[in-house]
Length: 447
Image 1 (spheres, helix red, strand yellow):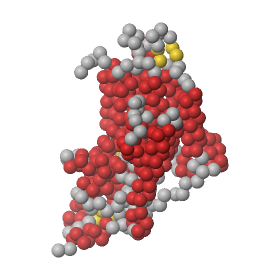
Image 2 (cartoon, rainbow, N blue to C red):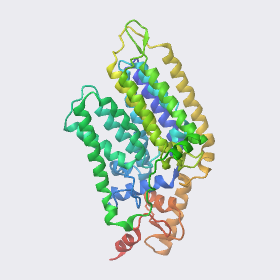
Image 3 (cartoon, rainbow, N blue to C red):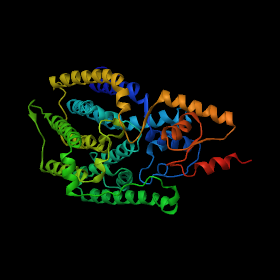
Image 4 (cartoon, rainbow, N blue to C red):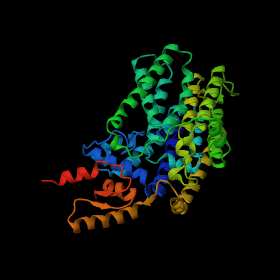
């Protein structure tokens, strides 16, 4: 490891950020939606596949659950396995982009890292949660990143990567915000055509998987609200204080990061911005995508203040759009001459990132309980409390000589968390997403 390589220190910063946020918050608090995902991973790791989507939910594919299966086989608990997958999907696009740019465009890599570190705390907390959003977003970003790589040729491989993007678009509607990045392919008609066909193929595959619920309607408990687009939604969201601030903050950070990264120092050591008509077309496409997203009814479905059901969970693709634009623009710019040193601004940026990391490292342990107690549509629970309550239920099952515990009402944390993390089978009477569970447990109890 070359300690004089600036990329190494950027990766150290990402690793420190990951450690601070995971230890201070994510391993302490859970919510019911995360536990649904962990429970599905626990079932699938034993080879029991009951539904292709999240339990009783016909619109999100459980990418975290699928990818966590090998980690569970290696001995990691389902809860922490899905958490690790989600966190890696959240950090990897930024870290990978910074690493690839840092070889001969370190200033652009610093801008990418600074963009990540300056993201709002609520976005950073919501982004790394296994909720069915971030892995689909990261996979779609990966597909677009490969499609837009320098020197890529139109081929069946391009079609396959575009199909991956389309498949993920079906699972998470707002990933469609990244589609304007495909405007960068307009100068290669064959690649653009293959990308379009691949997207259509991927979306078709997603809809095909959804036929499971068409033929098994009894499995559906949570229906996806119909998406509607209107100027009324657009104006309502644009004037909603918290939505407008969230959008405005992310768009401003994206813009600053892109401008900073595109400021390439040429051989004459003069700053220049390699803008072109195509960059303007991309900017227009991005603004159009953002406008379309603001016009949908789904954006307003959030609980203010809490990271567990934050408006930011619907905005995860926005910074990844900046990464695509920065990466593609950097490919067309001349690399820095070896004689050009890193500008002083890079050291200022590094100091700013360390200060922000220290501040969040102070805030998270201090305020995490207050954040967890905020009203949320996805009720939160600490890992310690979940362990204690599930232990009591396990004792009650053994005392009664029962195969599982059934309770009236609804408590998603106990229903899904106890089985996922501690192997305690729990069934709830109200809104039980695992519509097959009670019958399955009773059948398994028969001699």
